[in-house]
Structure formats: structure tokens, C-alpha cells
Length: 310
Ligand code: CP
Image 1 (spheres, helix red, strand yellow):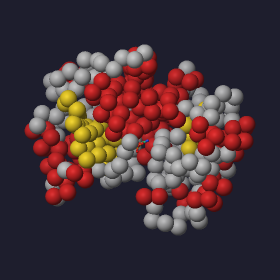
Image 2 (cartoon, rainbow, N blue to C red; image 1 turned 120 degrees about the vertical axis):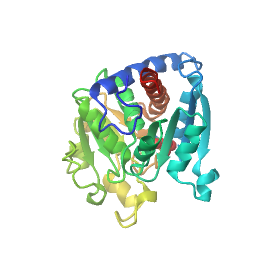
Image 3 (tube, rainbow, N blue to C red; image 1 turned 90 degrees about the vertical axis):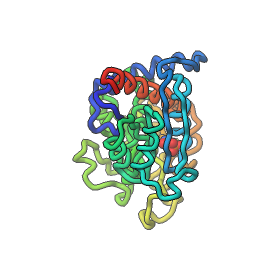
Image 4 (cartoon, rainbow, N blue to C red; image 1 turned 180 degrees about the vertical axis):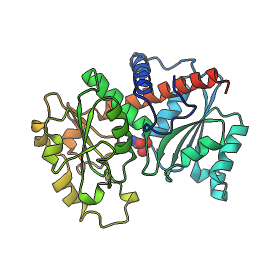
């Protein structure tokens, strides 16, 4: 069971909570893969997805997670809600609480927005990505795919290459993987490497080769053009040439290494199409893991709510 009514980030989530989530998500995955899509764990509960930024994977999988678990599920896009009339996040949250909502899965461009919402309403808030801060369910789903591939996260070398500076995925993975005993290596142009990432526990590689050598997981991250003020690298083609992961580079990774990417992928920029679609790729499996991790998180939070009379 989670120790909080909310899932806002992995910074304050324990290794035990991560393990419990991965174990439960794995159980759901076996059932989903066997064709089961009907569960009653969240029967009578209401989940609202409240997205202030675009999403395909996160929003759809939260929606399906709620539906498969038997919850009432409502989807709100900021672009078609009263947010457009100037309603604040807090007032939107209070409105949803007054409508009997139990869970809000939120994505917001401002770091800390889900935390503010969680403090203001009794509804459980699940962070689907807040600005450049965290994306906890993405890191949990990445860890599920890694755990299922290797049997354990302890001792894995995970190389994350790409736009580390703007990436909430890199930060949540660093927090989560470090707690589970994995080593996180990052590589990016200096302009896309945040100051102090090493102090958070990351190994900063000096080259693509140093990051990938002996890695069990090679993860590309999307260049987030929408969060950049410009001038951080000369062009996408130069980025791809000097920082992208190429087919032959897997030869220096550990035997059995896998390719991952949170998506959406800029094909041919962060990873070559043959790596994306090749036998070592786990990118599609990550999407299935996303559904199962979100089901697990919702159920564990529901248990917390039940136990604490919420
Ligand atoms: N990985 C991820 O968050 O994808 P979406 O933006 O499609 O949700």
C-alpha cells in the first residue's frame, strides 16, 4: 500500500512501495495479456483525467486503467473546459471534488501543479507529468519493463541519452532506479544537461560510448522542441549525428541489452528506425507496462483511501 493518498513523484516514494507497485502491475500484465479487461477493484469510484498538455500514452492508459478496473472515467481537456474561461487549477479541483471524484490524473506544464492540487483537495492526485519536474508513472512503467526483462533492477546499468535538461522522465527514472539499486548514466549536449544532476546520483558520461558501454538498457529521450527557447544545439541533423544512438553502438552495450524510449519518438533523431523497430526494442512493451502500472497505482491508492477513511 502507498504511504500517501497521492502519487506526485518518486523522490519520496520508498523502494518497498516501488516493488509493491511493480509486483501488482506484473500480475495485471499477465491477466491483460491473457485477454482480461474487466476487473472490479475500483468499482463505484470515479477517475478524472485532467490534461493541460498533449498526451497519447499517459492519458489513454490512465483512462483505460480506470475503465478496466471498473471505475467511472471522465476525461477533461483544458482546451475544452472552463479553464479557457479563466478558472484556476484549484477551483477546477474543488469543482471535481464536489462532483464526487476520487482520483485525478493530471498533466500540467508547471512544475508543482499536481502538488498544489493534492494539498487543496481530498481527491487523490496522480501526476501524469508536471513541467520539467517528474513523471512518476513513466518511470514505474520503465522499471516494470526492465524488471520483467532482467528479473531484477539491482546492478543494472541504465544509459539515458537525450534532452536530460527538460526531461521529467529522466528525473523520475533517476530517483526510482537509484532506490532499486540500478546505476543511471546520462549523456547529452552540455546545453541539455541540467546543473547538479550528478548530485542527485546520476553518472554523467563524457561520450555516447562511455554511457552505452556495458549498459543493460539504452534509453533515448525525445528532444523537447516545445520547451526550448532555441539555440541549445545547431540543428536536429547535427544532434542526431553527434548525440543520437546508432545501430552499431549496441555492440558495446552489455549482452542482451534492450532499447527503450518513453515516446513520442522523433524517428531517426534520438534512435535509428532499425533500433526503434528491432528485436531489442521494448518500446511497445513500455506502452503495455504503462497501462498495468497505472492500474496498480490506482488500486494501491484506493487501498490507502479505504484504510484512511477517505
Ligand atoms: N511518454 C509519455 O508521457 O507519452 P505521452 O506524452 O504520449 O503521454
